[in-house]
Length: 84
Image (cartoon, rainbow, N blue to C red; front, side, top):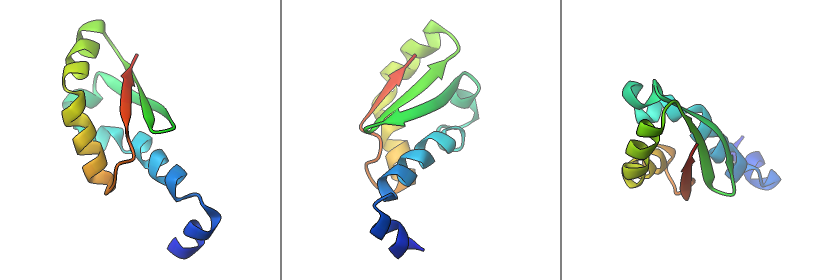
């Protein structure tokens, strides 16, 4: 299966998809309660946040969150996060 994925050239898209669907699992319950990953484009993950105070908090924690995401995914899939 991995060989077929490589041949089709869709590994990057699958990895990006994993960043969106595994958001809650990777960031934990506390952050997942106030945010939702909605999409990823060209390595930029878009995350909807419930309140501006949380958006500010997550912005400050962005490097930590990116390390967790990319670590869980096994490679640098998320290059930036836009909190909305």
